Amino acid sequence: MPDRSPTRRQFVGGGLAALLAAPFVAQLAAPAKARAQGRVGARRLVVVFTPNGTVHRHWRPVPRGGGFELAPGSILEPLAPVRDDLVVLDGVDYVGVSNHEGGMAAMLTGGAGGATQGASIDQYVAGVIGGDDRFPSLEIGVQTSAWGGSTQTRMSYRRAGEMVPPEDDPAALYRRLFGAARAAGGDPATPDRALLRRRSVIDHVRRELRALSRRLPSEERPKLDAHLASLRQMETSLSADPGLGRAGCPPAAPDLRGHLDNDRFPHVGEAQMDLLVAALACGQTRVTSLQWAHTIAPQVFSWTGTGEGHHALSHMADENVEGVRQFVAAERWFSAQMLALIEKLKALPEPGGEGTLFDHTLVVWAKEMGDSRLHDCQSVPWVLTGGASGALRRGRYVRLDHAPHQKLLVSICRLMGLDNPTFGDPSHGTGPLAEVVG
Figure 1 (cartoon, rainbow, N blue to C red):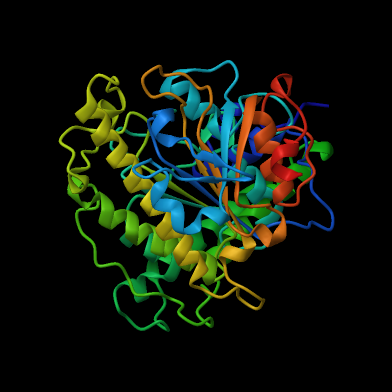
Figure 2 (figure 1 turned 45 degrees about the horizontal axis):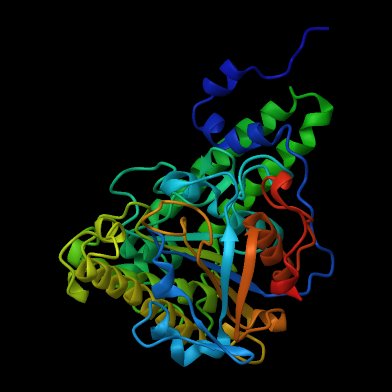
């Protein structure tokens, strides 16, 4: 009997159907993800990235008794009003990688290999908890794409080699979340022609894939069925009510032009943070990320009084006192943005529950490098915050001894109520960090 399995040429020749089937093709050899039954942990995950490492002596908190202080003038000092909500992690290493590119690729993935197959932590968690949401995950950026898509500019991966690009344009993000009619001030009852066309395309692709299913070996059909289900989820996201029954949904559309202009960086960031919080509050998603720029970020933080690009400032040696001062000022600005995000989450009630959005969210702040001058990936700064539905014990400065960050990624999964024993390359570490989840 002839082999009727589809060939690569047949997939390539299948046009749009092949394009939308690509995730299915990649899944043919992929084991199922471990899923936590009766999950108890944070209801939501927010991942934040800021670039170019740090200068440790200006970043490290000061231990005081059983707690810590954020020294005056230090990078983290703007977070002093929420100090008791923080877990500051010192001594986390990205084992076996160095420099911007290596650190960026490993930061959220833990490296290739292992059961997670190169997926980033946001995408892995979304695969477990986001299946019923309009958007299983939502990737938001601030000037991330001027250099295109590469390991220097992308941090989210569905699996090894499959990048998930963030949306840099607040207006486009608003349209995606709340509909073109609302973005344009139109009648919400008026059908969106673009959305109707997209649904029509999905219907066409689904018919092609069903025909393909008849030619597949029986053991491969369940995997294609899973992909058809994902297309159904995509279709649902196009037609679902974007949380409009909830108070404050939708928010006002951002009135922002020139989102790629250097001096608009703070305004774009504020708009994107507002939309991130609105997406959570309106029930659009439970997993989202905010990527400020990208590794080797060239933005000039003129609003903090700096005159050189952020990356250039990150190289300033200690002897260049003014250069280091300007870098610290830029980093303090990022800390102030984290404070703003925390306050936005605290300002909104938990939909249908007690407390606030902050109380039931885990927020992770990560970087791609440790010492910005040495370009190493040792003692990379990480900060965890959010109530995490009671899973995170906050108000701590945790000093680790070269802990592999694969164990930190497992710890984040634990805080989300997942039970996977490894994340990324298991040869560098398995299980969680007791100092984080204990």
